[in-house]
Length: 204
Image (cartoon, rainbow, N blue to C red; front, side, top):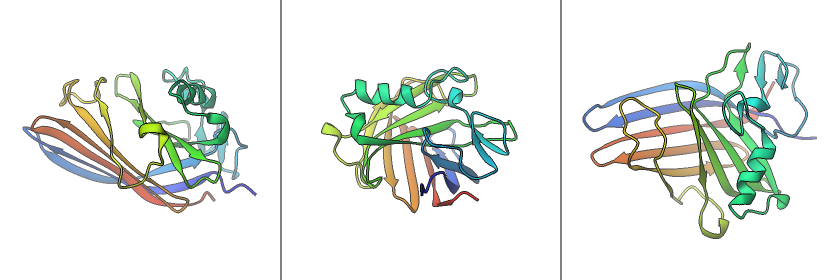
């Protein structure tokens, strides 16, 4: 029996430093799904209305024009990753009663044992409806562990308080029981540290 989908009762924290500084923290619900599998529990669906729903069109391409998992496989393959030997998972906020707020989702490319993370696509959507996806991996697609840092250049406007400059540092800790993601944006003296984490459990 599949263990997917999983529910993550997460906490997210944003701490801004520099000439404008503030910190906030709140709870949020994410789901970790096999986006090619069946729906799952009665109150969760893919591509049809339910209490909680994940629509393929919201992921893998422009918002509301996404292609879902085929897009993710193409993106990983274009970077040189052999997706035929991998499990592709999606960590995202579901739409709840048709309402969706999802500033960032994560495509996870894992070995078939679902314990070794090889690459991540961080799918970032801003408040004006734009989207950019950051591909994160280590040289030769070495296993991504919690102690490894992955860097990316900022090329996408996310916040009115940030320039399109500087860069990101990503850290990922992914297991069957817990997820912790940390993203640090740095641009000279200014920056933001965002974290997302929480335990995984069956979706009831």
